Image: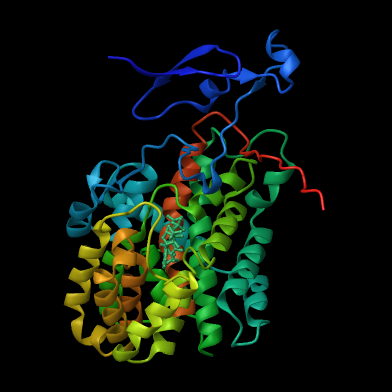
Length: 429
Ligand SMILES: CC(C)(COP(=O)(O)OP(=O)(O)OC[C@H]1O[C@@H](n2cnc3c(N)ncnc32)[C@H](O)[C@@H]1OP(=O)(O)O)[C@@H](O)C(=O)NCCC(=O)NCCS
């Protein structure tokens, strides 16, 4: 049965039938509704202006059609290419899931080897990239160093450099070229992060090998040899591999809609990933834990936040107003690595916050719970990473997902993203 909205515009008296498809209406159908701005013109319907939708923060607007990840925030479920996240988490490792998300299937050994080869080769940084990273003070923040490293990589990639000088689209409709560029982009980010890590820790950088996975090479280049770190992250990264239309994925697609190259598009996503309300929340959450110091000081801290109308970083999520399904899976990993995790005194503070927030009506009524990014941090900390590096690594684990969306956009008609604004005339003094 066809469903629709029956709408009557009281300005003109005209009625419209707006089709509903799978709980969506098309903005273009809303654009069929219109009325002239001047009252005198209403009778003649001259110069009708299409009705616009005002949606601050895009809370009710879908900007893409996608077949990659499905999140049901009310039921608390996530599916990657129709596989429930729990089943991929228990059956596969990140390398398989990365392939599933980007290319739609669990890879054969041959497919895995091909991706390893393309990425492994791209992980050998030109001297200019090494020079850019080593020119930063060792205590510089990771975020600007990543941007510099990615820019240096982009300037040495002949295909990426050509993007802005081609009359026809380089990647749109050319999936072979796009796939290679996409794999190189991920490799550039992994290499940049490893170079930064080594520079900050004043240790030598280890060259990659084409026989290792993305994660294997990242850790190898960083000089991390403990096998527990790779086995833990090979699972944890599955949970961050994609999360459909996040702020940073939208930024990648927004930039990508101009037909720019994937390195530049991913850089736009990295910038968003570091924002305090997005991935950067982790830094602020840890800062708060350090500031609180002990479990006894949690209640007054939370009460102060509420009184000031502030935010508890690491809490809340745009989509989940119930429990985030990834949290139970992270808890499995936390249990597996319990000793290393419990050695972190900040965890006791975090647990005390969780206990307090879970019974506090302010948090309960608004559906605010510890988000999966925050929970995952305790594993990273247990593995020896500090927060600045954790954000970089979580962004890397998300980049294949963001690029899967970029790749999907290349199979759809070219459409420049260009939102609108509602103009409000300045108030007279
Ligand atoms: C993630 C986030 C941006 C989602 O926000 P959103 O869906 O747009 O929800 P809003 O910002 O409209 O907040 C809804 C209400 O909850 C409150 N709220 C949301 N997150 C909160 C938090 N972390 N601490 C305290 N209050 C919070 C808001 O003040 C608002 O209260 P009000 O209804 O009285 O005005 C938000 O929860 C947040 O800022 N969290 C902290 C940052 C963070 O951890 N980000 C990482 C996300 S993975």
